[in-house]
Length: 346
Ligand code: MRU
Image (cartoon, rainbow, N blue to C red; front, side, top):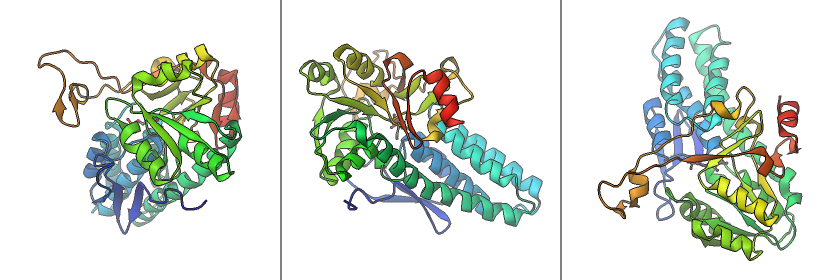
């Protein structure tokens, strides 16, 4: 099956960055083209591009734009401009560690150049490499997790950890795609994922497009489905996995993990190396709080009374004791996670 979602979510296009505008999906599918790093920062903040691996690559490309647009003739001036673009991009979303990984990687590359010209070339080459690598890494990750899915299984996911959350192929949905490529019949249960509806809008869009069986459910139906025995395993993506094995992912993931434990269903986060934060433990992670309008409105229409206080944490934290094993491109990580993550991921 090589006709799976072949569109690239983020791509380098002749000195510009092209992205699918995910805010318009599923009703309209089109690309936007950016030539300035400030535009990329806004696109990340407003979720034109979203999903941890995709924003890592997008930020790297934002820096490549800063590099190619720079008029600096001296390396220290060039590096100062790069640092300021990096700071702007770092300020867009706090939870997904891939964002910081992408920025750090490009800045490190820039730091190895001895002329402005060389730095420009190296930085854009690095961003392009990261685009290619992302697809390859996700394919490897998918293959390494495919055996966890048995023929006829129903997989519960959360949010969108698919091709649209990466450059292509996906992490959690990459595992599903790899299982389908092995000839297995797999069905995906897709919670709508309020408030931004990445499940309903994006995961359902990808799966329907790829003719992978799926059923959309409301977020509130998850426990009921598990209690009826309609979920064989849970596979989710991650925005950050700390060195002590805590998984930060889209809000709603934690309740899936608790319910999975209650019903004896295996719970597998799937994430590439770039999502592992070996420098931090779970207490040091900031959970993004997004605008109230995402909750009091649905697609621009108010559904709650004016003046009601709103909380909108965009991510939650699942502790390691609820995790069965983690799927990575380097193989499965098993408990004790605090020991095995640093061993396998360093
Ligand atoms: O707010 P989003 O849409 O960027 O959140 C995305 C998720 O939570 C994904 O599950 C995560 O980034 C993993 S994507 C491969």
